[in-house]
Amino acid sequence: MRKTPISRRAALGAALALPALRPGRAQAAARLRLIHLNDLHSRHEPVAASGAACDAARGPCFGGSARIAAAIAAARTEAPGGAHLMLDAGDQFMGSLFYTRHRGATEAAVLNAQGCDAMAPGNHEFDHGPETLARFADAARFPLLSANIDAAAEPALAGRLRPWSAFARGGARVVVIGLTTPSTPTVSSPGPRLRFTDPAEAADRAIAEARRDGPATVVLLSHLGLPADLRLAQAVRGVDVIVGGHSHTLLGALPGALGPAPTVVDGPDRAVRIVQAGALGRYLGRLDLDVAADGRVLAHAGAVREMTMELPEDPAVARIVAGFAASLAEVRARVVGRLAAELPLECRARECALGNLVADAMLAGAPGAEVALQNAGGLRAPLRAGEVTYGDVLTVLPFGNALATLALRGADLRAALENGLSQPMAGRFPQVAGLRFAWDASAPAGQRLGPVEVRRDGRWEALEPERVYRVVTNDFLRRGGDGYAVLRDAALEAYDNGPLLEEVVAGFLAANSPVRAGVEGRIAAR
Image 1 (spheres, helix red, strand yellow):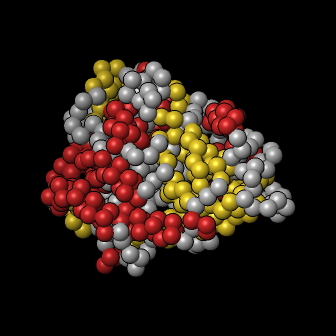
Image 2 (tube, helix red, strand yellow; image 1 turned 135 degrees about the vertical axis):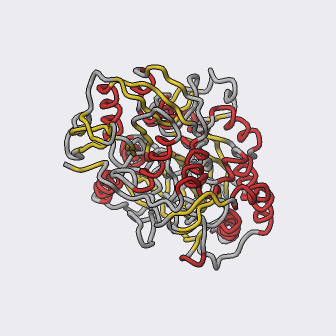
Image 3 (cartoon, rainbow, N blue to C red; image 1 turned 30 degrees about the vertical axis):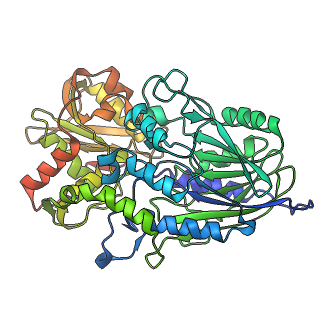
């Protein structure tokens, strides 16, 4: 999921203004290579730069799990001194048919074959509840680490998540501490029994506990996002490296990168090196470290490699991916409709044609509904012009959400829209049908929404606070996801078990092809 680029850039600018790292004087006791990946989002086959499925005729493609596996193997072979760790910073789940169909089995098999040493679960690892993650944990031959998740009351995950693990590599003791975004309960579906705690406090406790057994180089394997990682680096003592994810940030000497790899921040007692390698398998990162006997980092060298198509593939992982793909071919190939023009994925701070298409389909799929509301974060890939397959629709809508309908008073509908506008560039941003509104991104959160109108009998009418409106949304939002608690708490006559959203959109495409979706002024700046 993409996160606020403005705040990331401002936070990174502040970090880069800090004093430069001074070279250490101690003699290096060990050399270590960290190989890192984050936010694959089930993209086991190559993707276009946009994240859509690869179409070599339309532009360059990147990644794929077999190519990543070969690059990991090469990075291990070339590691200085031969010592290495392969770390994944989360969000392996959700984003393609591989996850929709196999619910984490592909991801476990691929990570096992790639030789993953540790993974921090991201928010998307909880999208289908603790039981799905528990099956993944049982299949994984590596630990799942999250120091700020208390799973004691959740039978499915109790004992399956560790706060940290220690590794002996090339004479160094490396402690890897996992952290998961505390927003997971509002952006995913972890259930009521998991408790997500403050990451900084959890990291501080884990560092103290791990160092009781002796000196160590401390690596935070973080699914918090770059802004949070920068704050963590400046606040928590004893952190040497942060391997990050969640914000899909590219750090490295490549076009489009937000900063260097590593980005170095002065922490309370030492310099902290932060790395993150984009998303969707387009990049693989490495960080080489010289460490002293007390675990402190004396010197570093970092790089991020783009997974271009001329790189080789690992044949064993290619066979794994092909095996899981075999059952997907027929589903993927079924053409459900046509688009007159491409629908890009530019939906988190503005009206977008893709959001209009999905919201229109929701409205058409819920007879009697007057208003449709879809979160932008539920849209995960663009759609190209021309034939649209069911596989394309599933890539856009990979969460398996169902339509949910409810009656809602106008004042509560307005509160729902204010929530959607409270965090521009976040997944909660609303895409709508049956209504239009104006908003001011510069106003304080909670005061951004301007006039709202609802279309009735072909005319636009002002939203009435006491009138009850029939609303269609997805079941994730109806249960309060993405901060839409008002849809849960103020709903009248709610029903959450409608048809699957991807089936509704596929049916809408079939019935209306060629579809000509566009931006119509449903969301206006003021």
